[in-house]
Length: 143
Image (tube, rainbow, N blue to C red):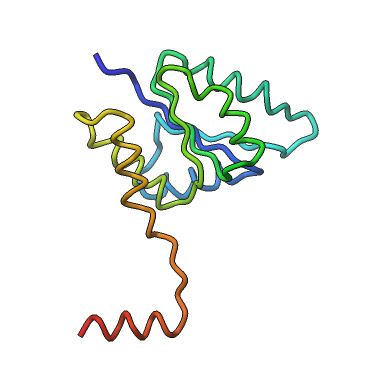
């Protein structure tokens, strides 16, 4: 039987809860997606928070999405990278999380690894620089 999949959105400040709020506008309340805000109060303890997230979800396929490669939050989760059923994605943005949730809902036959790779592949081009030149070229290509 497949394990339950849990997505945790976490990054600096309130980026995780902000992205989750936006995703839930589209999908409604999601039981298998949660967020954690970091560094928003003086009592925040990153190693303890990360450890609690990993242990709380040890019986699930845990997919953690962080905001910044090389940032403190991502680096703390890297300590758990060799654990079974733990998956770490960095570079969180709204299109990535929307696609990940979509894949989670339709990818019963795909492994978590395949689902993540598909998600990243299909959203890599979502970041674009739209200047007048590129918009003009895009409009010219449409005709």
